[in-house]
Length: 460
Image (tube, rainbow, N blue to C red; front, side):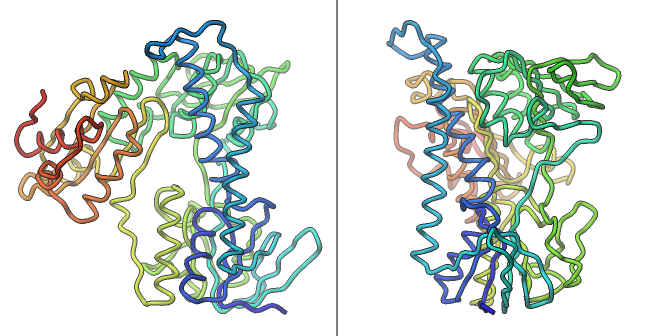
């Protein structure tokens, strides 16, 4: 029976990063993954393919609308198969990259579904039968799956999930998206740009409920202008297929009919069939595996990271969990500052946030100051023809320490990295403002917003 110092269950961003880091730190590591391709939901059917489609669809949309600066384009037409082929090529390059890294770092890979049979033994059920593995330590990194919504009858053809929404063979004339969060808005944007009439139904009073209110209100206004029909405070009670169409019923409201209905309400931890009961691990009422500050479960040598534990369901959060968990095993120290984990929505313009929102600071009674700066006043934003949005910096009113940064605008997902780094080092807004920023760059908008938080901006 094969025995390993560490077995990682799941080869998504959390699992494969944990496996590689553990191998780099000298452990003998194996990773169990039930899918043939490595990389998990993120690389195969989530982050990577959706971003490939978002980028391609945005270019098509700009060409179609005649928004390319100084360029006349005639007879613009969509080649959806080519766009999907590009997406598939990007996915394969990334999944093949993980396979290469496993070989490079001597991580043993097992294909199949893992199930605990005792505190130190797993059974892997794969295409060639069962394999028993012994381990000294184990990390559960099985990620998350689409949350089913009561009354929504998913048939994966007409009423679909994000897995199918990244692989449609033709553009639907109409699409209803259930959920105004990150996934719903991103995939809704893709198909809207490609020609579908998209309606987004959100249960909460506003889209992007976990983000800063000012940011989400600005995003809703911009996305509506782009053609998305966004309806908030909509409680979906039923969704089903009738006469080849998707039908969505809303409590106290109208009934929607569309060619495709996309369920994108939320995600839940993926712990099905792991045999947790065999080792005495009990998930909480939301299906998450409880862990301590060192990512240890109720069984100390079994760890859990990423989407199966509390915290934001983000690929990069899972990666940080994985590194911290294995560093803790080997060195005795590993830590993740969840307050500096950024969140990004890859619509156009992008939306990015790190730290506390204005609503959270008010609720906690924290004295704060706010500085903001519009991209309309930024030279680089004008030059690239993308001036929608702003940067907002929130600081402690007494110490000037940065508590949160919220951006909607061009390349917000890249700009937020500076804010996350600054917050990691407990920077003040003055620290950011006094750091020289190259001109002309979009990053100058963050500098000016920081200046506005403790004094006054220059360029407005």
